[in-house]
Length: 497
Picture 1 (cartoon, rainbow, N blue to C red):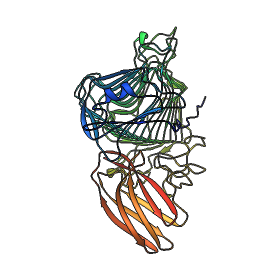
Picture 2 (cartoon, one colour):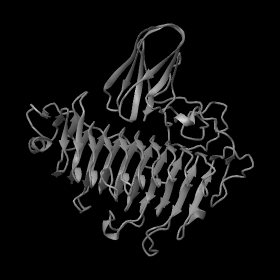
Picture 3 (spheres, rainbow, N blue to C red):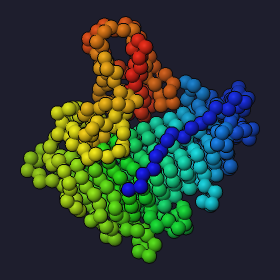
Picture 4 (cartoon, helix red, strand yellow):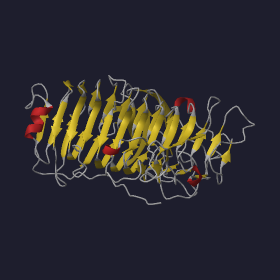
């Protein structure tokens, strides 16, 4: 299968850049006034307040060497409330949005498009540490709508309470995107929908709780006039779904007119009706490939008694071309269960064995070294990191959490044991730290943008195990716990809901 490498988009520093301040008593009273004055390389910094939605900006473009940044001021809350769209961006480029909140829209929370012409796609956009929540609509309305957008990232954002008929993120004809480290809860039709000729999208390290009818709709049904490019012969292709956690949803993953899609090293816990769906909604054998040539590998699936079947297969598909291998399937409470109903024989499946999750009721899906999933994964090059930011071992474990991690952004130092539990949590959790030698220690809660928002501990810790409770009140989302122990630094991801 063709693989695409997803480096993080790089935003260069512009020494001659200006910062434009927005808000009551600032140089610019609102975002519209600041946008009218912004130049490539500038930063628009918005100060605390609730601002009216319904804004439109066409051709808001930086350059490859001088991006435009629109961000909330440090430690300040910036909300765009109401409007059909909070903001509609047409043909933007080299734009970075960070730390903004969008709520109560009646159309789409934030809408980014190519002006209806994929000949000039929108491109190079980063959405970072933003919150999209509480749609004031029930139809086909999306928290984040993307049409004809190439080379983009959506990282460490939160998506809450989407419209009943809409998606958290809806992509039509989008390409070369990274969706990583986000939190989705209470979505309608989908948490993420990727259709209309979309290709090369990587969905990694996200947490989905009650993610909708199809938490991931990999493909879909798009009107012929809306495909980007208009010669596309699939709804979606060459997607990578890595190291995600799914809790609930009617179906965790739907392959819908999609080809060459990998779903690898994920954890799927108690879907309501199906684990997977294999469907074809855009039917034209002279133009469109039938859904097929997709892979489901190294995943943990825990099903419940209410499940209709593990795999729902529709007409005009090629289920016989799917690959199933090295998945662990578990049916708690039914020791006589013979295994899942899937369209092809599975290689090296692990049937009806308890993966031994740490605390699934509270969203903690770590597995111990003694788990039947430990070291049983198929050897693949990607993903490198598990859901918790730790490196997969060789041989790797099955599921979104590596039982025996070896490296990664959250790797534990050789002389340090560092644990957060339960994780995810509702804001009350324990921190456990084991030192071989005593040391001055500072532990802080850090938002995705890197800003420290609360000091959790500061002082000298003795050798041995220390454990203490923490209670925080912050918006739901993905955060980091940073421990500075002497001159060393350890970082771990924590999901708060």
